[in-house]
Length: 326
Figure (tube, rainbow, N blue to C red):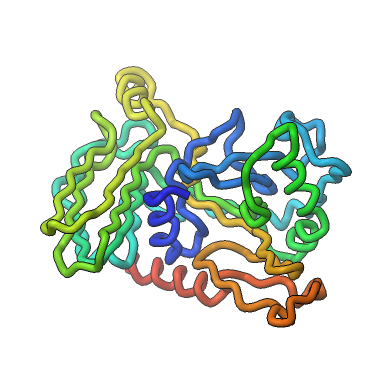
């Protein structure tokens, strides 16, 4: 994963939604769906290989499925939807030491926030990240019953062979293959990431404008001569202009099809010991059983599954969001 994409994913894990994607736009004809199996590429974009929650002949699987594919049947009641989980505005890393808004947001154009509001940030850490939602975001996720993890353990080898075989030939590791269990989507967004070569007490400032004409703009200044990386991205391309044009007639309401956060399961493999990691935060992988002895070990199903970051961090993220809205 590229530097900017990695910084963004790591720095925004505190919200408990999983990895923030540097490029949330769909890379295929269909947006991200629950049950997608795929990879997150170097540019921070999710690429679907196939979907395990639909039949092999479904349009989501038009690129083919692994040998012996059998869809996973889950009760529809396990699928949960949380509308408007975040309002338009910035989501920042904990390293952002100052946030302020100047001006007033103009009238909405369809469901995209109007221009006029300017957010200013300051950061004195060696890295920081920022996601600007230009519309409300919706969260969709699967309740964890263990069936997804069990299914992944049973079929992961076939998934990896499918990804790296002659048809696709993707150069990846087993732990690069992920199974989507949740996402947060919006209709328009902007992201920024910063990383200094060394820790510095000098302040870094970012300025961004919300929505409207001219897309999202950034100004960047760092009061230091040290080397640094700074990158920005916004999208989807042209949606703001289309919204402005349509507002003169009938305002366009754009679909919330941009996956700004992705939560998933992935295999962690050490020697011959496999475990499932539920990804919605930092990567934490304790040493596997009998790893010191270099022996082949497959743990039992219960012992091979771990949630990262675990329920406690997700609960803390929820409490922080409640406090910030008070």
